[in-house]
Image 1 (cartoon, rainbow, N blue to C red):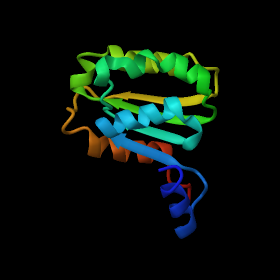
Image 2 (spheres, one colour; image 1 turned 135 degrees about the horizontal axis):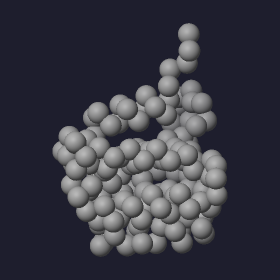
Image 3 (tube, rainbow, N blue to C red; image 1 turned 180 degrees about the vertical axis):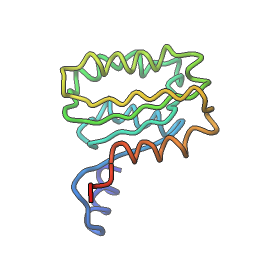
Image 4 (spheres, rainbow, N blue to C red; image 1 turned 45 degrees about the horizontal axis):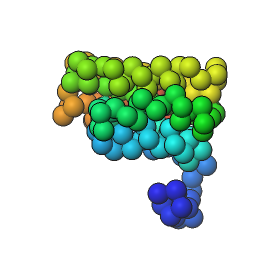
Length: 140
C-alpha cells in the first residue's frame, strides 16, 4: 500500500498531497493498526466499527505504548463504533484513551459512536458523514 499503491495513485492522478485511509470491520482494524504502527503513512485515518476485539483486544492493549513509540503528529482520526461494539466497549475505550493521552494537537480525534447502527448498517451513513465532516465543501 505505502510503497506501491500510494506512489501509483500520485503518479497517475492529480492529488492534493493529503492521504487518507478508510476501512470498516477487519479493514477498520487495519486502519487502527496502521495508525499505531506506521502513523507517518497517512494524514487521516477513518475506522468504522473496527474489529478491535480481534486477538482478544491485544492491539488496543498495546495502543499507548505504540503511540508513544511512533509519535503520530498532526493526524486526523475518525472512529465510529456501532451497537455491538458499544455493548462491549473496553477495546474502543482503551484506543480512545490512548489517543487522548497524546500531547495536544498531535491527533484531531472524531470519536463518533453510533449505537443506533449495527455492524451491518454502520458503513454507508458513517462513511458519508466522515467525508463530509473531514472534507467539507469550500464556501462559495
